Length: 119
Image (cartoon, rainbow, N blue to C red; front, side, top):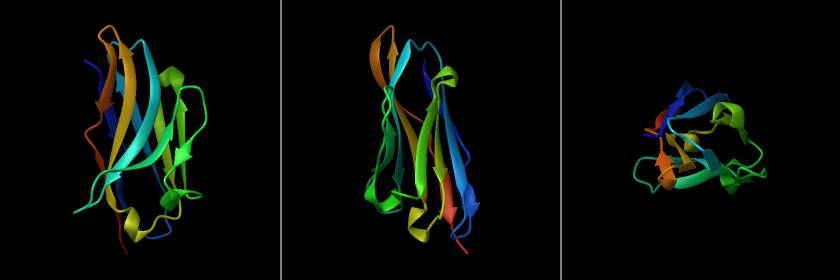
């Protein structure tokens, strides 16, 4: 089975920074798009940032200029550098990846990592 394991969440003050990591493991042929989503209490899950396998990135308007998504294909890992964090960034952050396996292309989700922005 393919798994995504996230790390890097925690408590940070407004204006601070955190770096999230998400590593994929298992019988992987290739990983296509990877991305980060978040879900705040009482709200729907939303896309934060995405990065296709061929390059290029896209971001939610609310995080443009503050967050940077990147990936290391050799390590099957995607990162989210979060700077200038705001109270509204508090949420559970989920990693997502479209993984090509011998069973076809699967959409895999991580278990989530909590980011709390608080003074």
